[in-house]
Length: 162
Image (tube, rainbow, N blue to C red; front, side, top):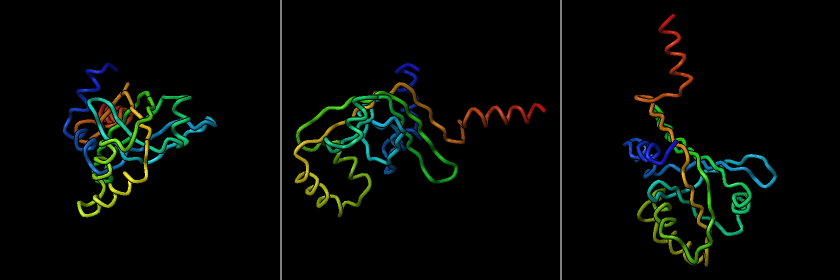
């Protein structure tokens, strides 16, 4: 899949809702022991990249340095479901302080009243963070209105023909 195709998917209204909404991403990667991991995590978007900030000594940082291939899912629990499936390659970078994007991502999941105390606490806690930048290599939006999983689409065609 090329970057233009990925950008077209990310530009769709439901994809934008998911990328800018309050739902966490489910972030999948291989741990240092080779076993898969998936964690819910806050994120922000810059262009066609997904960014995550974390503690420099987090296990995922070392794991991503060893194997940078990742997958993310952002979805809603409502019916019909809206699901954005993403795959990419992660890079890690140590940065001073707290990235503005991390603060924006945090604000998405709390009230305006909660945010100032949280932001103050985060800024006091972190002297530095690691920013994980995921460069996307593949994307798919399932909105169950205009797009559905291929296997379901094939089954519908099979039943309709038969």
